Length: 169
View 1 (cartoon, rainbow, N blue to C red):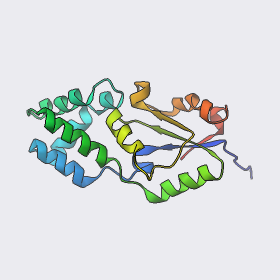
View 2: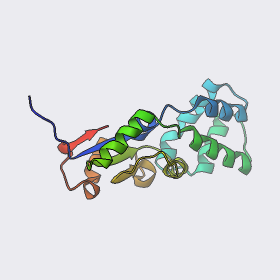
View 3: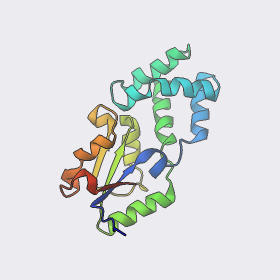
View 4: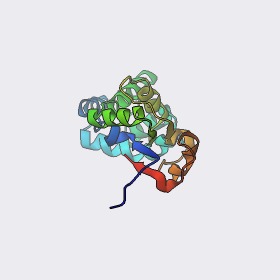
């Protein structure tokens, strides 16, 4: 049997390091639009790709969601939605977080690769539970969906290894 000796482990954020989006926060956001959770989710995800890539700023994203739902929002409502949305993605998947921390502490290079908008990234990066990473790549920073091809963007923080040396977490 061939032993695998990865140079680094790269983790996705959503539903890997974090638990699924918080249902109480999703319900709260839907209630602010006075629509069902299913209807809200439809609108929420319709424009999310552009928001994750920073093609839409927070106000434009939430106005697009509101318009799709035939609603309007005040600036204070937009600010509240930005906060609730960011918080909704900040529930750790404790075992994976511990594993990532242990791997990093053992000296193996780690990377974080994720699709998320700037306000979520800013919120998540302030979470004390987030493990350290040698490299972080976010869609909002590269202005496109972060994916497998972005493994090639990681060598500066991972010892200059080739793509085949990485193991996705």
